[in-house]
Image (cartoon, rainbow, N blue to C red):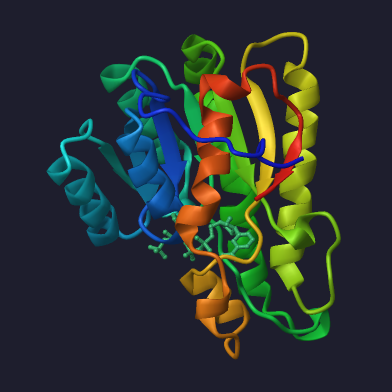
Length: 248
Ligand code: NAP
């Protein structure tokens, strides 16, 4: 599926909504966090580099948008204590979540499986898959309290068709899509929480530059170009859309 043609997010689309975005300090997550705040949301910025999160925080606050919450967490180190901190922060300060965007990911190595570094493999699976499960499970109650909350899983072209030399990244995105599809099936008749997959496609970020070092970034769409699809799925305009896969 794709964004409805000519869709334009209303200025107040996300007013009163609390939206947690992982990997909010850079790339697509950064652009999305700022856009959500511009559309009225209170954002919870999760990422591993505090200075990057603070820069997003400053940009949002300086523009007069709702003050974000900061969750400086390395998803590679996500354990029960950190999970409880996230649950406490959400429950105490926000009460309910209306959106959770799983966006943070590692790229890893572009080498044949026979040469793939095993530590890198485990770290990727932890960040790109296990952390997604742990955060989703922990935050489902807060999402349920949000009524019509929206979960977005950020995948990739290799999430549907793994290709040679994409290693753990491709396998992790394949697993992510499996997780998102299974969860959507479980929530289908029991919950108002919606779950959808987004493939941003080739986008001008540092991850893309690492994956394709010889590519001219100027030929790629910017992060702002993929934001409208995420906004659409996070807001009430997409009410009832559930268990779908979107290409940006
Ligand atoms: P990016 O520029 O590398 O940004 C990724 C973000 O995730 C960064 O803020 C990074 O934090 C954060 N992150 C990475 N590891 C983390 C960890 N262990 N704990 C917490 N945060 C962590 O990548 P992007 O291109 O914006 O990608 C965003 C999403 O889109 C990813 O899921 C990616 O797979 C997907 N995607 C991107 C493209 C593309 O062409 N760009 C295409 C298809 C899919 P730091 O900045 O601190 O490292």
